[in-house]
Length: 506
Image (cartoon, rainbow, N blue to C red; front, top):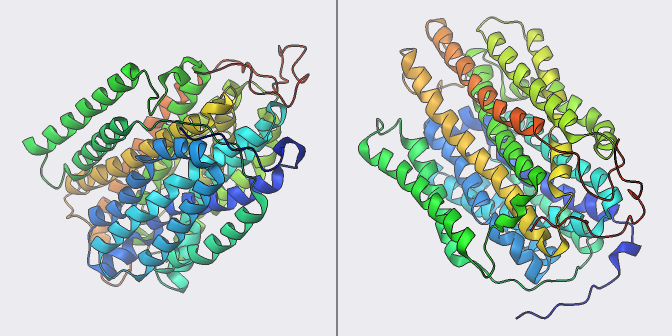
């Protein structure tokens, strides 16, 4: 049994915002890498002589290695100390980024991305858990709003940063850029992030094995299905993945010691619904980036930088709305905020699909992109704050780990599903699987119409999946916590700002 270590300082007496800013830098970096590869896809295909499915694995391998361990790394932070695990993960991530940039084959790039994902999985739960522990309930909404806005902005600006780097320096620099940022993040973490009290935990190794095996079988089966013509073996892998996941859930329910996923967390309705919503968002953002960037570069012949600039209106709106939405998070029913966000995002993707034609004016893309940014701003921050309202302190790491794992599971499935759909749509349009244009230029007009239609249709997949997120958002309840100051809140809403969350999810 690990003995609880005393806190270095009573963190409630310190200003927690500098620590949050330091954590958000590392968090921003690892989430940028979830989508940054999408804009570099044509360049990597041409340079490493790969195909679309190979390069999609560059993203899927990262997301898979990110998602599977994140459940246990949250617990590890509770036991060893979130600061130590965060810094270890940041070191692994930074070194793996250097490795990614130095690789000369798509196979080695995928392997390096696996290691990079492992580093990211160590960092993410710690950021959320530390926020839960250093911010009192009355201020946690604004803190989580910044954290959620960071997640939203990072996944949107990844392709923008990637476009500039690919055009100016080469695709390798989408990974090299992480090295100086990682070093700065380490210095800030050492200086600004507090050392917190640890809590003893047992590790559910069987749960880790079942969740990892189930995830791999399911993702591999979905993503490789089209390549193997949906053979009996592929379907067997998918069914096996579902069965293993069912065994994982059953084991979590029967484990009386300390399960990897404390199912008691899901007794809180808002926590459960917020997990559904964030997994849907992970799916949608990952799935929409790949066909969007392929259409811009292959059909319209735009450079990586100009393709990435199509996303600027979206990112700008998300950034501009981060603070006002954060202020609303502690005062407004979460159903109103996230429901509006999902509705706006769905409309924006359907609108964008209709605009993605070979000859459309680039100005016509601005409208749906602005609406997409608005929708994202109203989802990421309010949903993150809603999920963590009632997390008990000893389960902060576990709750944060589960929340981030569900987001990553959604992203992994989104990456796999969009690869399948793109291949299927290209085949339906009578086109071969995309293997680059040779010179990175525009497709001949004889192929452009079919390719454009395939990419536009693919955009409807994330829009359809987002409907599930909209339903989850509309079912959210008014928060039951000390910091909520909205209509109907109790008279003692802010009587004890520094107390632990009143309602236990476990």
